Length: 426
Image 1 (cartoon, rainbow, N blue to C red):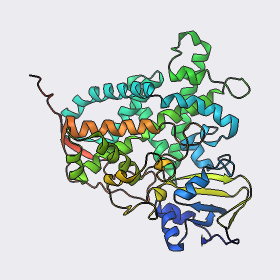
Image 2: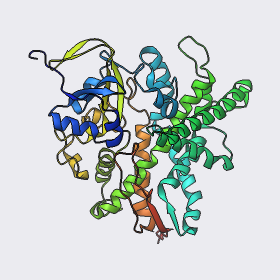
Image 3: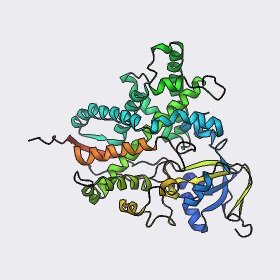
Image 4: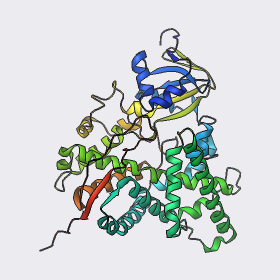
């Protein structure tokens, strides 16, 4: 291991630089310093920044790092919710995570996709009647409806646009500064309170509920002491199901952008093409396009890694986007190239490609809804290559990497959307 080494330092205070630069900040410092590990002060707190497959494997070592007291309060009050599963560890984390693990079953994913398909068919006539649509907005609304039906959350049709708007504010305002951040906090407060009312009504009249639905399972969940989870915690965890599904709209839009920007991909995704290429394409969408930028944890105890001393309590940030684009791991990482996955082994993505976290879904903090995201991207690929015709008029589709989470500026506007006639059967 060699002797002890000083961890490279980027700057005295990096908060403004991180906000200004966005996704590329950590990687730019790693490249400048020639190290996948450095430290700087983030909001006046000495913080470790890490990038790459090896660093991700270290970060997910639960003997050395903990998520407790790691996520910034501003994210808890907007994106994650206070008291949610992301900030738990040990037995409490395992028990809470067990609520989410049934989402991984193919049966439950198939059920969700049936709702998505239903909402797609219901919305399609509207698209065909409009001169143009903004695809990201439409996918947000569609996925919100489908997710609430899937969970069993009673939602009136007239309430759906308002709920969708609040969920999008939670996603897009979490990293904002100023009025948008406070709008994000208010959106979470209003949404949690609305869910709490429904949860309390269920607990007063439990016999009226369908016990097979996620809503009832969450509302009836207990803590490690055998007590019902507080209604507010149940609301937080229900939003931790619905919100990521709505957020996956970005990946669906990115997939359509990739098809538009790389015509050879459309040809390779034709109906006669193999499913193998389609899997490569979906993985490359997740690797290439920006989603959640980074994760936070705290050092659990003093230890030494490659000669660098890690001190107990130190905040550590893992660069998700930078790991997915790490030049030491990915050849020409800034090129969109689905064929790169021909050379990958089945288990290589556990720490090398971590768009929704790394390690194991069941026991660690990897997103349990990752398979749902894969299914939703696959749904978009299928519909926009085989079932729809459309035009993409001139617009600004640039993706600002200093805006987190990133999105195409235009939201991807489409015109003249129309369903292809079903092939006749002779």
